[in-house]
Amino acid sequence: MIEKGMFFTPDKKKLLTDEVQSELSKLTEDIRNKGLGGNSANQLQQSKKKLQEIVNLLNSKKGVITPQETDDILTAIDESKRSRLESQFYLGLKKSTFYLVIFAALGVGAYIYLKKKA
Image (cartoon, helix red, strand yellow):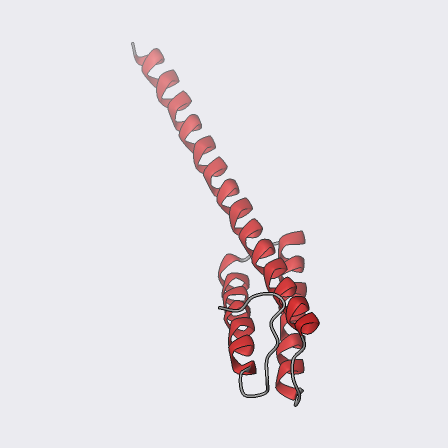
């Protein structure tokens, strides 16, 4: 488990790199599958760009990763998760509202049809 305030030697930095890669792949999958528009897509793209920069930095770094660097990386991962989950929430909210409106329209249409028929 990676926690804030930890330091990583060059042989242990793979744990941190794997954590960032995991979030990056989830973020990429969400961007590809959701077809989001507006601020959500821009925010997810910015998070993806930032995480990719972190991966490149980790791959090029030869020395010890300090606790401050670890904290910054974990903060970037947390921000990415937050933005990803917010976009999923709002997308789900939009879908459920759409289905509710369709259901209400069908109900009103059925009521009017049955009222005219009777």
